[in-house]
Length: 404
Image 1: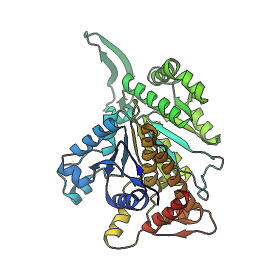
Image 2 (image 1 turned 135 degrees about the vertical axis):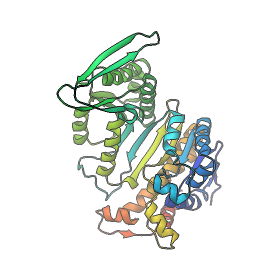
Image 3 (image 1 turned 30 degrees about the vertical axis):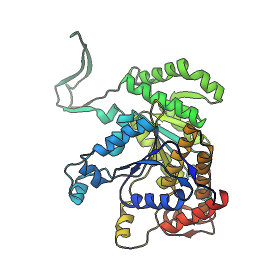
Image 4 (image 1 turned 120 degrees about the horizontal axis):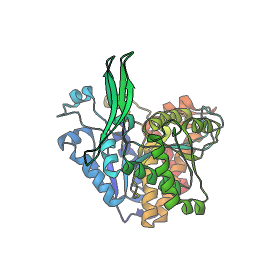
């Protein structure tokens, strides 16, 4: 075998929980370490270690990502009350993804992995559709109240000099009701826009953005204006040189266009729209197990992970010594995405080429009819075989060796 590919700068490696943690080690042992002199700065984001460190390890991993520029993350548990009891936690720790996203000020881009035999529910979707969700503000940081009949609700803003501006929301003289106050920040919207424009240039894909500015003439219109101003001042020439397009339309028009399209673009969405549309796109393409996720900061830092969770049910089977057939494709593509980006940034073309070949071998394995149980149930291939978790990785390795 040829010498291992050498890395110059480490990846930030964020280990995780349950079955994905088990797969994480298998991927490194079977598909990566034999071929790469893997250099990582390791952070254990498993729930027990997050609890042991009072979640400091999550913050430290995000800071390391800012330093080194590229991270790869395993799926992690965001604990609820049941998990607090199961793991005997000191408290109900926040979502690691939320913490990392806040430190990096990043935007999450989710894209489907297309393979022959897994047919999208929308027949004309031939290329991936990447969803970019602005994960700050709006209804997720809203303030809301129930209002009794006879009350009057106003929006009140007091500026730094004490001047007050009032707008009537509604006079509830005829009926009780509810009110909701939302906000967003120019700084956050600009960071979102910058991440979207940079990712579009990086992946050479058209960028769509949509709001409802005809109805929300100040709130949604602010998003539209910030995107357009930034595009005109910093990105227009770069987009034209690259041969890609920035396209704005109303959200309802965007939905209609998406359904009729072939795909092959990034669809930037406000927070709630992105929450809904990312699930729609993921399921319409076939499976969350075939969905990549990358967090991109406005200044070009990248964190790659699978879009799915920790596969708890399979982990409990694994602990009992039972055979599992867990889909590892999205986690493999998290590693390949991070390795490709590390190769690009460090000028190591053989590292980027290895990432390409790893992805090709993974897709080839499925398209030749060897896959995990979840994909076997989705696949329309005539000759297909469901294999266990580890066998699937070894089958990918067989094909990878022929490509190297």
